[in-house]
Image (cartoon, rainbow, N blue to C red; front, side, top):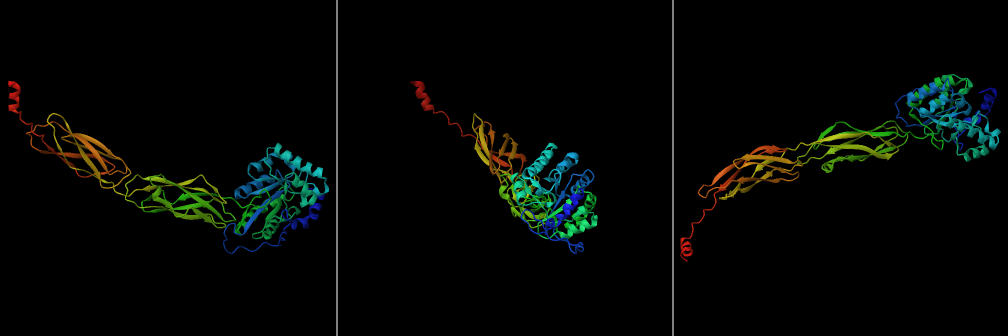
Length: 465
């Protein structure tokens, strides 16, 4: 910036200090000295937002180092670039874009727009945007008039092109040759709680190395005072950070009747109340057995963690260990994370006891006779119960389906003679899966009925004819 530029900037200094974002809200005058040290910790963002903006770049000597500071501190910023300097340092401009910082239009050669015709205003903004696009940047639709020089005519032309003009509320006059300590003091001293704090600084003037040295202290001091840093939205206003919300579980498993703590995390503080809506995903078989202490978690200003409980109800139903998941499904002022908390529900109910029920059957004289033996469970289970038996009547297998408490085994009694006495045969439980073995069964086998003797008189009548 030449001598003419400095004179003009000084001429506009009074206007800039009282400048306002679009509508002319007066800025607080900077103090000569920085406030004393903070005596107590304050919640992040509780005092409001600060938007850092940097003009007149990009600069090959200052801008890359400034990017490193901002990225390391996770601070957003808006760079109002001069088109001719984008053309002379395109790699630096692309580095700003790749790092995710917003880029605004600061005209082609930093000329006073109030001295230009409508056509010249359109040309300088249009040429600058074309150069940015040519260098594969992604400029937004914010612009800053050089020196803060704007009147109704210029504002109308700018807006007719789709741009939003953005001024500032805090001007430390960092271009004027003052030290880094003085720049820092002026910025920190001028920020006001719950006000529109838009800071004007420069990364493309002769004194920009001092600005670069001041920025880390500005960040640490303002954060210690409870401020958060914000970018500018489409209307040119500082926009609250939008945190990413995720949920974690204190433990990976919980037994029936117990509970496990859940924590909802925000990856950054915000200056406005927010909320996260939780979703519980459970298999149908256990959907009734789990619940959340709340489905909507609310966060106050600056709060980044909230706690709740996942409850597992006690039942008497033997079942598999199954998993449920909890995720952030939405909310207000947050973005949900893809991460989710998975918790295994451990069953503590005893497996049911399997008993075989005694049976009685009458044998046949010439054919096998089937006999059904009942299988009974003394409790419910959602597991299939496999039962294997063996004995003198052979081997048999059955499966009692989940949620059922009764099954059947079919054994075979071979043909027997009528003169054989009644006998008792043991059916032995040899294997049980998903249950506990109980009582064996006794099958009472009765002999077949005697065959009646032939009727001799009838035979003789037939034979004598």
